[in-house]
Every structure is written in structure tokens, then in C-alpha cells.
Length: 78
Image (cartoon, rainbow, N blue to C red; front, top):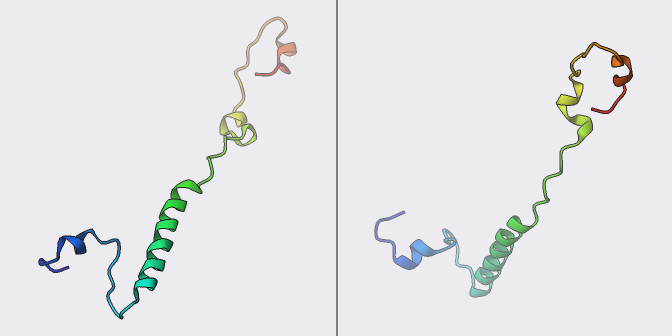
């Protein structure tokens, strides 16, 4: 970019490098870019909650606690 750019050129969303588009073509391009920019932020799906079945901590065995009734507690939920 040259150092002699006008403030309008520095603020521009895009710049025509080659060709001579009509005002209608530039307006259509501006509308498409604006719609794409606004849709990008709103169309993202919410992150899914982690599944308990895929939790790596579920593969770890709980501590063994010896004592009376310990065999009964082996099937209790953690």
C-alpha cells in the first residue's frame, strides 16, 4: 500500500485491484460480505456438554476400601 492513501481508502472494506465494476456490482459485493460477517458470529452452534460415557475419569477405578460391608459398597453408585 502506498503512503499517499486517502482516509477513505484506508477505511475501505475492500479495494478493487483490477477491472471496473459497476455501482450495482459493488453494492452486491458489499451486501454479501456484510451478511457473511454477521452470519459468522450468530450461526455457531453452542458447545455440547461433555458426555459422561466418554469421560476419561470413568475409566479409573475407585479406591478399594477394606472393612465390614465393603463387598456391598462395590455396586453402589459413585
